[in-house]
Amino acid sequence: MFGAAPAFPDKLHVGRPNIGDRERLLERVNDILDRRWLTNNGHYVQEFERVIAQMVGAKHCIATCNGEIALEIAIRALELKGEVIVPAFTFVATAHALQWQEITPVFADIDPRTHLINPESVLRLITPRTTGIIGVHVWGQPCDVDALSAIAGEHGLKLLFDAAHAFGCGTSTRLAGTWGEAEVFSFHATKLVNSLEGGAIVTNNDALAKKIRLMKNFGFLGFDNVGYVGTNGKMNEFSAAMGLTSIESMHEFIEHNRGNYHSYRDGLAAVPGIALLEYDEEQHVNYQYVIAEVDGEMSGIDRDVLLDVLWAENILARRYFYPGCHRMQPYRSYFPNAGLLLPETERVSSRVLVLPTGQTMTPADVERVCGVIRTAVEHGSDITRRLERAGKRLHGDIVGR
Ligand code: T4K
Image (cartoon, rainbow, N blue to C red; front, top):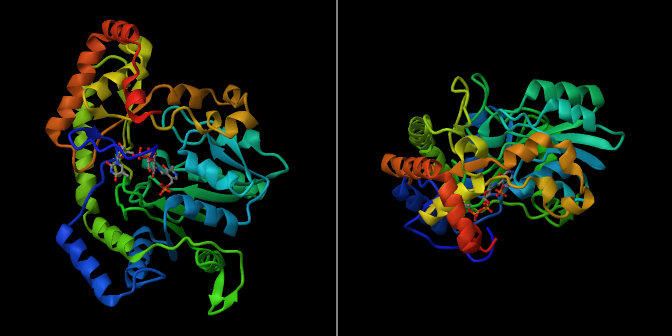
């Protein structure tokens, strides 16, 4: 979010929240008000934690106020320091969670096919100062967990996963939630399952879970007894009620997303230079992200021009994770030449366009988006010339970025 929230109800957005059963949610909200227990490890937070732990097969789940704070707490509880290797192609929260604690994020490159951290790139970045690796299950696809675990094991590094996108995702036999020392989910409004704002740390490590639980509650060991430097990372009861209600509709959300993904695939199949990221449908996929890669030469239209066309048509596609964390501050100043070591991140982040999906997108909406893309590609060079003449960047101008 940047500046004031733009309210565009008539527009097709990436990130429009999925809403579960309203009646059920309101019942829970009323119950919370009746109980007069609004936060601090309340009834619904405990239930939310139990449901998640059971679902993903982890021994412990600690709910938090958001995914970023969950990452910070997990990083601190794991005692990471010095340098930690993360992909450059991720939401900036992954890097900031380290930098906020004066740990240097060292940026690894990605596999251009999956957009996931490349273990060979990780290997090349290990130094005596490295203490950990954070793999990110980008778009919900599981990282190459075996390769990352082997590297972490050989070099004595802690392995943490940012599973912000990956709730309900995994391989064919295992959901994200039990890999590495711990995994972190986000339940932000834009995620498949949302608790308005929210996150969770899941782990099988008893001692780590205990420490995280204390850290997210100011370090309190008991009344008037503080044992750690803690923070306030607690989830409130309304968020947990929303999260539980959202989980109950999760399979409907996934089915809806799956339908949208296949409609996009059909609608864009014959468009030159536009390729959708292929999910491995043998795996658990939540289809929360529809990722198009725009090859400007083949399509005759640059990704950013196509984005402008979509915005002009009230289709608010996004360029996640442009321009890559290494090109954002403060990292750009710290590592001005990082791009030289990140060729795939540079290329992928200049081509990716995230298209709207989720419960609010109907088949007709998806067809409309595909139609605009088909027309834009057909008239690519003409549109580019006109936009240049007008000197206007629509999507940038509207949100002020
Ligand atoms: N790690 C990874 C890999 C992540 O992707 C994220 C978050 C995190 C860690 C951190 O987790 P959290 O601390 O957020 O729990 C959005 C989300 O805010 C963010 O959660 C998400 N990743 C990221 C990929 O996307 P912005 O800055 O793009 O948000 P914004 O305000 O521009 O909204 C995105 C779209 O959603 C817009 O089209 C508007 C629409 N929207 C948004 C909200 C909040 C709605 O239609 N309704 C809404 O209520 O970051």
